[in-house]
Length: 323
Image 1 (cartoon, rainbow, N blue to C red):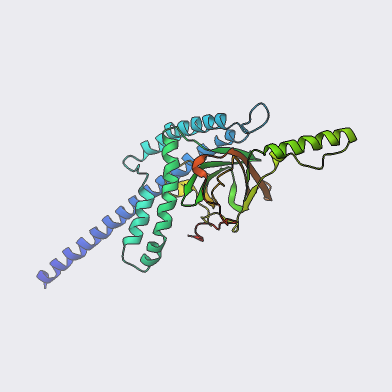
Image 2: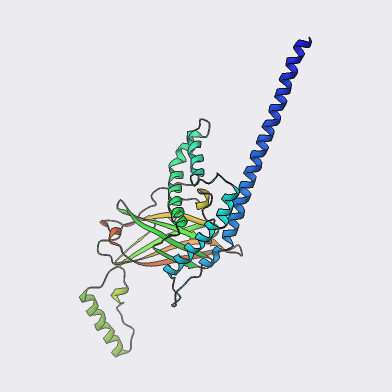
């Protein structure tokens, strides 16, 4: 009997020790995870306390000063990575990996289980979100963030990060700083301009002279201010119909920055200048919604031009919905 009890006691003792070790391991892992998240939050709060300086940067004529803004933005992110972010990684040695989050998502799509099918279906969306985030993240890390245009309205700044040809469409990648809560998108309107012909100039100059003699307003508008082509969003929301923050995909991406993109028709072959207007709605400190418009008058790059035969409107490239 004693011989039978002794192995049983050993087995029970081993089980108790194994349970205690497991509990200690789980507890230590949970504590480490909690410390990681707390440090991450502290790092993000420190950045948010300083990024408001980016909002009201203008030139002597009170117009958005793109180059000065980009200089300030790169100075800010350089400080961020060398101070709060560096301190965070010093406290979490061995954990720095810009691909950590996307690797976890890839693993979810690969693991067997009830959620594999959904995760596998979402993986292309996650990969695209990561690539957009990583492109800007790498620019931030190298202090060479650039943008095609930028403007602010109230507490919100909207950057046109890039405009690129994608097939016979243009892809407008945008970045929004300073919004409180989710951004509600109201779509875009795009107008194209070209230099007026000699005949149009002559007709306008004659009308100006006639109106001046008669002390009347001219009946003709200045042809240099008239657009010859226009397009607008058929779907108000951009391609990602959900909130994408860069910090959702890279741990130390500066927080509070929302990313997205629209697709539009290409520029007509004879376009020289464009006027792009984005409409958004953001939450004010008082809790009320703020309707905002951001206008960008930009010289047309030759790489943005394409076939415009029959083009009227272009829907978003895909409606990804909420992920």
